[in-house]
Length: 274
Image (cartoon, rainbow, N blue to C red; front, side):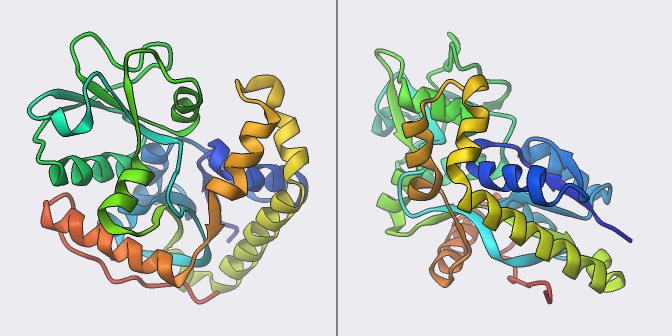
């Protein structure tokens, strides 16, 4: 049984997307934002996907982590930001808008603001690049390509906070934003198919990283970024190797999320045998 594979088609995985198009065309790829694919994986409509790292905690009984690949940043992430009318230390019971696209970023922001002594009124809804903070709010969370655009071209009279930097200030650690996971029942019933799919995903990633310049050039006509901006972002800011230090940082994130009851419990990190 060939697996159905979800793919979050953000620029932070541009090398993989490029690799899928060139060396893994036979894979069945389903595209969507993180929150959509989180739900598709939970419903069993896809078998493997890159997902918000917090989603593994919420579905850990039914999922296995694919080893060696992730989306992480050592400090700056530049594509997960808080745009605010006031300094972060002055946010208290203000209204903060949360993008509806990411579960990990939402909880990361709540952890960071809690550590700053803030207890905002959160509301989840769409956030626009051209007006990131609506008139009825003090701040807004953006992720992905939208966030990167605002980070590189910040609006006047607003404070822009990189959540990777804020997390590093808080913990001294890197942050894993996304994992690749497989449904446990698929892995148990189809170990050979999983092995083939995993090798193809790794090969697509490696191809895309090796041909990073070509991958960047392929999207420049449709993206509001320069080659230099994306070249710095991909590989220097965003990294894709799942390291032991990264997993230690992920456990800290889960512990803080559980302490604030943002997840039920700190999950065991169980890996697929691939």
